[in-house]
Amino acid sequence: MGSLFKQIYRYTRPRAFRHNENLWPYAKISRAETGEIRSLSYKGVSIPLAGLSELKNHYQGDVLLTATGPSTKEMDFTVVPETLPVMGVNGAYVLQGQLQYSLYIVVDMEFYDRKPEMITAIVSNPDILFFTTLHGVAKIYDRHPREAIKCKIALIEDACYKIYQGKIADDAKWHTYQGSNTAIFDEQNKKIGFSTDIRNGIFDAGTVVYWALQVLFFLGFKRIIISGLDMNNFHQPRFYENDQTQLPSYLENKVENIVFPAFSLASRVLEQHGVYVFNLSQESAVPELIFKKVKLHVLFKQ
Image (cartoon, helix red, strand yellow):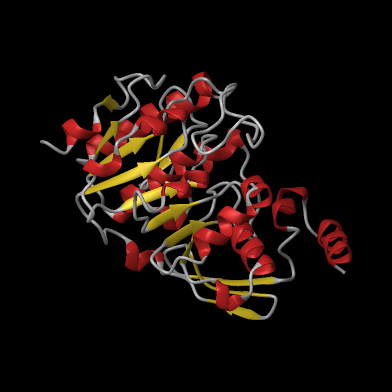
């Protein structure tokens, strides 16, 4: 039946709407005046969502963002205050116990498919506010009994692939969002954007960390401390992997022309708003002119 619905959808919508084909007609949404998806039902079941408007500037102070580069193995997280909010991405959840996650973000659908046990552990944690896309929500509810989903879900969207709206091509990003005061674009490359209001969507730059920066700014944090932001040695396993369990990385060919310019834009926008990013990876390829490098124990002595 799903294949039939997909074919009907393809033949009745323009190609720019193709990213919605696996959701129709299962997902029904309504939007708030501020742009975000306010309510969702999936396969006839009402899905509880954390309201993005209620989360705006809900936090303050510091947050630790755990990325998954190999340098994470060298971190001594015992110096991290127990009260510090921690956001994880993808497989960083193996640190649960050393750290107490209260925020999480996964937007890579391949990760859902390749690491289902990790997703199960995350969504079963009632202390977590989980940021993901509608495609992620669909995978969660297709694969878990409703009573097993204990986390709170905050629904986010790619600004160029909004649900039941047409795809916005790279060349059309700036023209589409130039009238918005919450979408800032790189002066040298108008294809690279940063959103200061995630209710209007989040701009992708090839890495979930870039999504996380936009989310954490929206939440109100003033210092974002990142572990595992190596952006090099892509042939090596992530800190939670080994040679047998290593998933492919698609970042290496995007680093110089997409990721670093996007991080540079994020750094400028954040600093203009009094938000500062610190990189705990001492061997990170991310230039220190973008994110200042600092050691964890030094940071918390200050």
